[in-house]
Image (tube, rainbow, N blue to C red; front, side, top):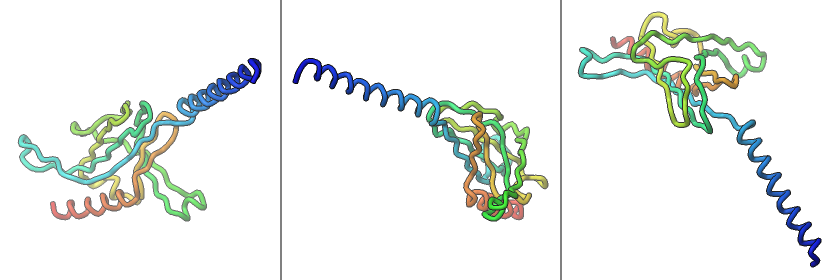
Length: 165
């Protein structure tokens, strides 16, 4: 092998490494965005300073990374397979309570951080309305929705706890 062929082989190898590095940087910085996960539950807050247990609906938003993100706005939607097919989904914006136990939106989130938004039981709670999911929007304009089974469980649990009270 001559010196020219070795230099050409080394140049081709360095070109391959540089192209791989460029592709990875574009994927990491442009294409791959942080992911938020939304969970919904109904529970009670028990503390020694409270005379009784406080029932609350809790929406938990967690940043699964990569990188920082921000939870901007709570959304509600009524959807099913036929509503999606005919583009008849119903969307609504949910304004968080002024509950002192609740987090605030917009909430900047590092990787692994979460924010808990609490809602008091009441006659105008969103679980009593005809929606099927709750979600959050992020700064990139994407929407993340809780699982439908979580929403159904929370709705059932809310009805059970409100009847018991």
